[in-house]
Image (cartoon, rainbow, N blue to C red; front, side, top):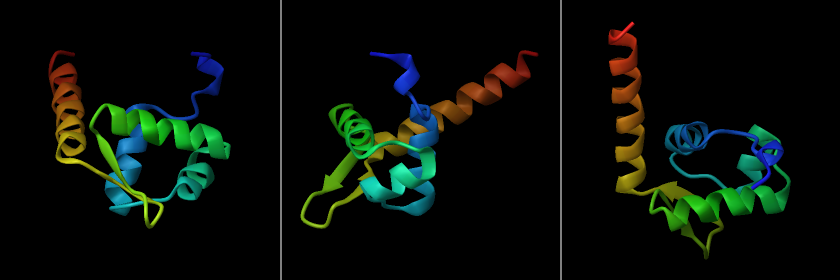
Length: 85
């Protein structure tokens, strides 16, 4: 994968979804500057990892329980790294 295409980290996208509760591909495009296909790919990758789930009939996406757990993991890791300084 070409790293120049990465507009946001996985954590940033998960936080954005969590804070909004749900979003559309267009919300991701607006927030992070993705083109339509890039935003769609990012969301489908999160879905393959079990971190987000689409509501296809409404074009909306939300976090799964695993997505929330991943964010908790990131927060714990950040605290551990900070404590180790």
